[in-house]
Amino acid sequence: MSLAAYCVICCRRIGTSTPSPKSNTYWRDVLLALKKSLTLDTQVVEREKMKSYIYVHTVSLDKRENHGITYQARKELHKAVRKVLATSAKILRGPFADPFSTVDVEDHECAVWLLLRKSKLDDRTARLQAVQEMSETHHWHDYQYRIIAQACDPRTLIGLARSKESDLRFFLPPPRLPSLTEDYSIEEELRQLLASLPQTELDECIQYFTSLALSESSQSLAAQKGGLWCFGGNGLPYAESFGEVPSATVEMFCLEALIKHSEMPTHCDQIEANGGLQLLQRLYRLHKDCPKIQRNIMRIIGNMALNEHLHSPIVRSGWVSLLAEAMKSPHIMEASHAARSLANLDRDTVREKYQDGVYVLHPQYRTSQPIKADVLFIHGLMGAAFKTWRQQDAEQQGPTDQASEDEARHTTCWPKTWLARDCPALRIISVEYDTSLSDWRARCPMERKSIAFRSNELLRKLRAAGVGDRPLIWVSHSMGGLLVKKMLLEASKKPEMNTVINNTRGIVFYSVPHHGSHLAEYSVNIRYLLFPSLEVKELSKDSPALKTLQDDFLEFAKDKNFQVLNFVETLPTYIGSMIKLHVVPVESADLGIGDLIPVDVNHLNICKPKQKDAFLYQRTLQFIRETLAKDLEN
Image (cartoon, rainbow, N blue to C red; front, side, top):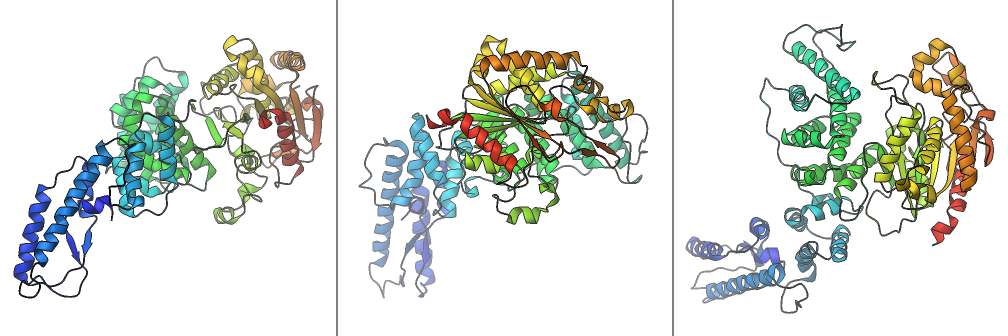
C-alpha cells in the first residue's frame, strides 16, 4: 500500500451492499474528523490526498447486522494514520541510512520518496544515481510521476530532461499564461520588449536588426488597425494584400533582433525582467507548425541559460518541460537546439558552456559512456550546422519517409546518426557562424567580417565549450577549412589556447580552396550578387591574405605533424538555373600535405555521402578511427 495512499483518509466501497443513510452519515463524520486532525510536513502529500485511496471491503454498517464493524474500521484507520506519521518522519526527516524494515509499505512505493530525498543530497554521485534511477523507471502510476514533478528541485528536473529514457510525465505543464486583451497582440508585446532593451553602445548588426524589427512591427500594427501598408522605405517589400500582413515575418524579424540582444548578459536580464520568458513561451506554443520560429526562440533561451542567475526564472516559467519534449523530437535540428539549452542549464554534469552557434550532436543526453575525444564540424559558404552534413539527396524525401527509414540507410545529419553510432566515445560538435558568410546575400548589410575576425570569434566560443581539453579532429567544408587553418594559427599565438594545438590530431578538408576559388574570378556582377565583397576578395587567387594563410599554415602543420585528409570535387556545381561552375579545382584543394582524393561529385555534395557504406563516409570514418586510435584505446 502506498505512502501517498496512507495520506488520504477516505474509503471507496468495493462491495455490492449499500449502507443505511444514518450509518453513512456517521461514517462521513468520522472521516472528516480524522482528516482534519491529519497534518503532514510536506505539501506534496497534501496535494495527493484526493488522488489516492485506502481500499477496504465494506459491508452493511447497521449495528443490528454487524455489531462492532464501525469500531474495527476506526481502529484500522487510526493504525493507518499512525503509519503515515511514522513513515513520513522516517523518510522526510530521518537519516537516509536508517533501515526501513519497520515500515509496512511496498518497496516500489518507498522508492519514490527515497529517490526524491536522494536526489537532493550533497553527494553528487548519489544525486546523479538517483536521477538516473528515476529516468529508468517506467512502471510507476501517474500520481507517482506527479509526486516527483511537484517535489523535485530544479537540478533534478533538468537532469530528468537530459536523461534519454525519462517519461514526459515527470514534467508539469508550464504555468498558465495570462490572456491578452482584445486590442493587444503578440507583435505589439514583442515590439515593446525590444523597445525596452538598451539601444545605445550596440554592435552595428544589433542596431540594424532592432531597427528593422521595430520598423516592420510598427507598419504591421498600423495595417492591422486600419492604416496603410507601406511598400517603400524600410518596410517589408511585399504583402499578399492590403488586408493581410505577414505577421510571421514580422515576428521573425523581432526574434532575430532578440537573438542578437540575448548574446549580451545585461540584455538577458532585461528580457527576463520584462516578461520575455513568458512572451517567448506564448509565441513558441502559437507557432507549433513553424519549426524555424521555434528554433529561434530556443536559441534565445539557450543564450539566456548561459547566465546561471537566470536558471531559476527559466525553470519557474516552465521552459524545462517544453525543452524536454523538444529533445525527443525526431527532427535533429529541433532536438539539437533543445539539447544546447538544457546543457547550458545543467551545471551538475556539464562544465562547458555552449554559446550561440555551437551545437553538440553527440552525446545530447547524460551518458555513462566516457567521452575520449572531440570531432568538430565547420561548414562553409552556403552551409549551416546541420544541412551541410546531411545525406546526399536526403532533403528530397518527405517527413513520413524520413520517419520510417532506418537511420543506417537515411539521415538528415550523418555525424549525428552514423558517426555517433560508429564511434560512441566521441563528442561531436557542429558549428554555425552567421549566415551572412554562408548565405547568398548578407543578412546584415553592416557586417563585413574577415576570416581573421571570424576565426577569433569561433575560437573563443569553442574554447568555452571545452574544445582543446580532449584530443580532437577538425572536419571542414569549403571556406570552413580556411577558418580552421586560421583558428589553429591564432591559437598557436595565445598561451591560453595551447591545449587546442597540443590536442589537435588531424584535419579533414572537403574541397577547401587553399589556393583560391574560381567563384571569385567569375563575373564581377555575379559574384557581388551572390556573396559579400570582402569574403569574395579573400577567396581570390591573388588575395594576399589567402596566400599568407596557406604559407603560414603549411609550415605550421608540418612542424606539428598533423594528420591531414583532403577530398576534392571533380564535377561542376549549378548555381541557380543558369550558372555552372567548378568552384574548387583539384590544384586549389591540394594543401601540400596529406592524401588528396578526387571524388565524382560537385562542391555541395562533396561532404554529403549517399549512403553509410559510400566511400566518402567510410574513408572519413577510417581516418578518424586511425588518427584517434591511441586516444580511444586509453
